[in-house]
Amino acid sequence: MHGPCKCAVLLVAALGAASCRSSADDRPSGAIETSDSRETPAYALNNEAVALLRSGVEANLAGRSDEARGLWRAALERADDAIGAAARSHGPDYAGYDKAWANKAYALWRLDRIDDAVAAATQVRRINPAYVFHPAFVAALSSFVPPDATPVHAMSD
Image (cartoon, rainbow, N blue to C red):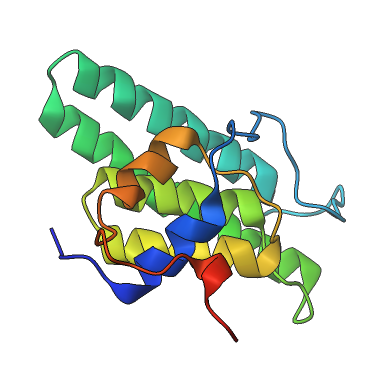
């Protein structure tokens, strides 16, 4: 596991505590589907990532840590697939699929890849500044923030 990074300080201050807003049937805004499309839609890939994340948590709680890590790695792959599918279906001007990026951040966090989780969460904030992260994620990242860190709202641009 990596030590605290400066971007975690900024991110955690910006995350705030709130409930998770992901649902199993969320589609990226402006999703376009065609009947002749052969690619799995981004929202379906993201739903698979959510299911894999949840299964990983269940396995971990049951003491099956190796299985949990495998499920979280699969969730990470599926979130990446969803991010790519959304980008391909929306074109070069698409900002990104916030929910898939958030699930990528959650998977990276569960895999103890904190710096990468912070980078993914930062991307979520670029796409959707109002995105609501899961409180456990916010609390976990807070533990990587040094006690003398300046909160983001007190910093100037």
